[in-house]
Image (tube, rainbow, N blue to C red; front, top):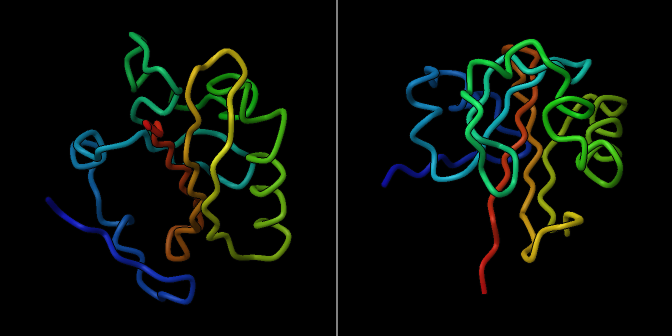
Length: 125
């Protein structure tokens, strides 16, 4: 297993070097967003999975079109706060309406590319 280690003050983000094929191998959902929330790289980030091909999410707004549940609460609030502060590195757990499980969200800045990552992992008991 590959461990991607980084800290808030890490000047080099190892995620920036991942290809789309590498992203598809991550053990959780991942979406790379521009500052307006538009998806520039994506792999099965919607909780519960789905049959939608990853490429079809490119160019869509993550918070309104891809994962509208994320646009109605803490995820969007933390994303917007990170944009204002110029840095984003927060991990938190949240419940998604209609799901029997919680998800762990990690928002992370990609400082070199000027993009932002949203990682979503299903939490199990």
